[in-house]
Image 1 (cartoon, one colour):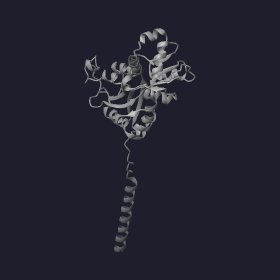
Image 2 (cartoon, one colour; image 1 turned 135 degrees about the vertical axis):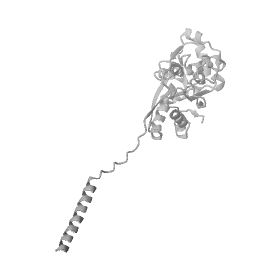
Image 3 (cartoon, helix red, strand yellow; image 1 turned 45 degrees about the vertical axis):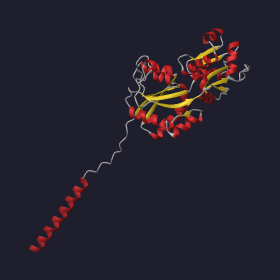
Image 4 (cartoon, one colour; image 1 turned 60 degrees about the horizontal axis):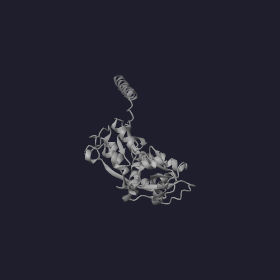
Length: 286
């Protein structure tokens, strides 16, 4: 009898322990699934010359695969307008100008004798590079009967009168290159304007549009803009006529994201981005 009672007590204890173990197992909380860390989105504001609109828009799409956490916001306009906006405090991380003049005016390493008359200091030192080279081109509008086949012809016809040439304003790099071409041929812009042979655009896209719409006989623009717009390139200016057309780029020292801005600038110098630039006629400078 005592053995039977002991056996029953032993069995009861086994069942009790098993029940407690089961209850504890059921009550144990589940381990939370590991959470993947998501990178915070960084917005980069890029100010770039209007002549870069097509290429930088395409490159921006390619960059999404390289840095998906970076959102690029572009502001395209004449380099003079962009320089003024930056000077007045506009948010900008990276500036790409169509000429050194506008970049020099923001570069604290330059003094008044070297293009920085206002003593501005907005360029992050060590980031500035010469990114691209372009060409200044003469494009004659479709169906024009001007008989212009070269810059030599253009100079002669401007002197004679009876034609209409589209050019950039004096604060626009393409307009400044045009003024150098006038000086090369000994042409006086004020006299030409008084004769009614000139019309102006506030950036190179406006000049390109006037030629494309045949609102003028011809226009002086960049070879890359002529290519992108499907316009004929009648002649290209030599360095002797207007100098080299260099596009400098730099991170601004007021940027809140200088590392990301530098990374995008480095990408603009990559082989992949260079192929996009070269496809429309730019020469990447490495």
